[in-house]
Image 1 (cartoon, rainbow, N blue to C red):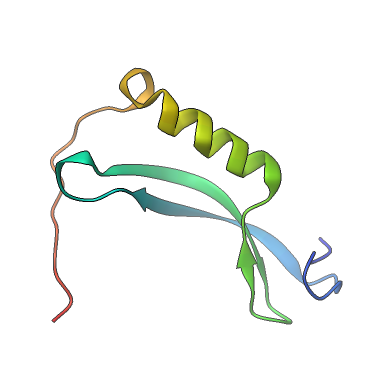
Image 2: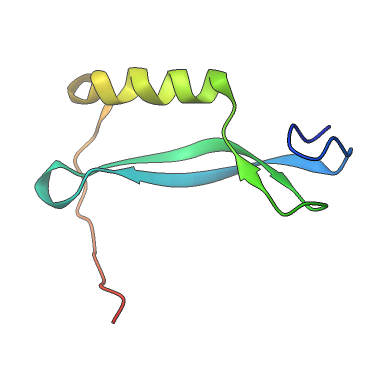
Length: 75
């Protein structure tokens, strides 16, 4: 896959986990497709993925499933 940043054919899609918000209003979205390039080291989300994240965030009550969440603080 071609990287949108450097233009080389060394990008690949990885599934990542992103969190939005904090405290009791945190939303964790799993299996987000992110493009990662081994040539330039950049990772980014494409426009389609960003639109889907916005849709999930605006409809969080419909999509989200409550689960216990362990939280650690980097000290």
